[in-house]
Length: 155
Image (cartoon, rainbow, N blue to C red; front, side, top):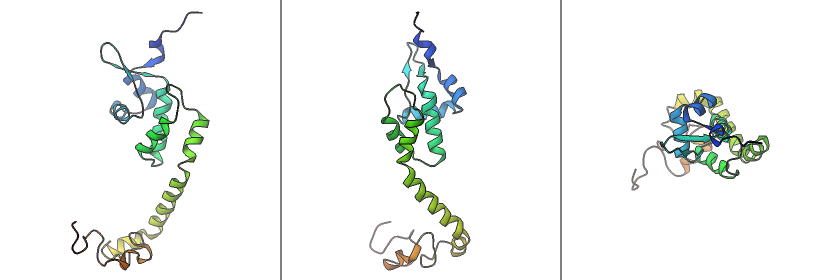
């Protein structure tokens, strides 16, 4: 059986952009951050293997839930090279993020529930701000806005 040429298994940056929905500039950024990789042709054009489509989808899904790119990169580094991440990969990698996401959801709920109070205090009174200073923790160390440097300490 004849072998399919490698070039048919590869995508240009424009093709990857069109198929993934990510802007070309985003793909270049992802590559610079080590999230995806390409090879260069003799004409110095980028070529991506088809697994880049799934990796881009993985990156974008993780970004939508607020996972930092460095964390995403670390997760992708656990996958074998040039293998399309599958459902089991996503489940294993995303499980590690569950605690972080639960904490983020909790903080967002607190923000939602106390948003009016926060606007009312103007974030100048750490004694009253339930978001910046829950239970007046900072009041034990200092008074005033936490954006102001403590006496004797540089800003």
